[in-house]
Image 1 (cartoon, rainbow, N blue to C red):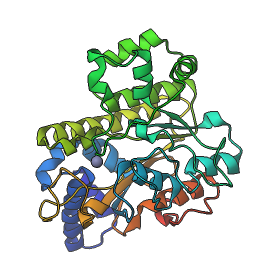
Image 2: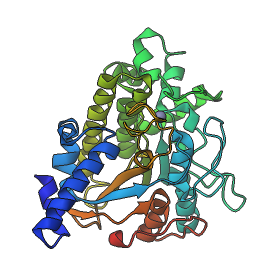
Image 3: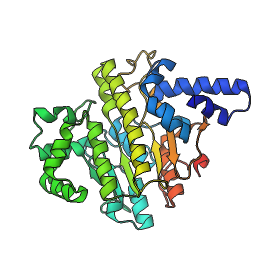
Image 4: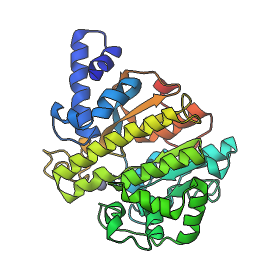
Length: 355
Ligand SMILES: [Zn+2]
């Protein structure tokens, strides 16, 4: 239903509508939700299909030409440059992040830009090593699993389902210092006691739910202007169990809608917030001999590189689809143009349809 309305918005003939409908459906389901299936997969993303996409500007071809590892690809999304840092090392991005551009140009305090990331390997994502930016200008990074580990002195069986860190190999877990201090700071900032945090964590079913819980607290207590959350449950696909992958997709679908509901219900955000949702990259095609279907993202084939993006909320047209190819690196220059800060070292181009 949502698709028909979307497809009709920028197509002039019935043939064109049909073509677009078929194309966007197929591509969205294959790359976006990561389902190497046909239209039957729609049932796994009911919130995106029925609630979010109909009120968004939807881009059906976002191409990632960079390295297909989660940390380095997310760093590329955050800098607007295809970063080449080692995906498995504890390194900052080499080019300025959107957080640094935002804070430096608009003279924003440290409390105004935050990242909530699922994997402890993302601990350096908030701030680059660039000499004109870097230390002191980036985003604060919250690693919910790190906090939970600190709060529970190493986790324990009750929290194990929330503490799996990385589905990719080689496995990398950086040594993170200052846990107790961080935990106290976080408690004060989020107005959350360690006991409340632990008790609430027990009610959650996955690491991404823990992240969304933290994001909600952060929005209520700190109301940052720029907030970036990464979700990782879907990457359970690497384990090879299709049913767990589908569970991850369904949960992410629900959490995206929950985030939007929170935005719409918080006075600091409602009516004046733009939400961007996009995957870091896709997954290998079923028919690529070098790949293994949904399980990995190793081949660099078209499906593993092509995804989608939706933007919704303040300043964005509703219910429009754009099939023109764009690149992952276009996100940062677009945010800069929309929010009024310079992103001079980014390689991508602002997306004119959003300006
Ligand atoms: Zn992965």
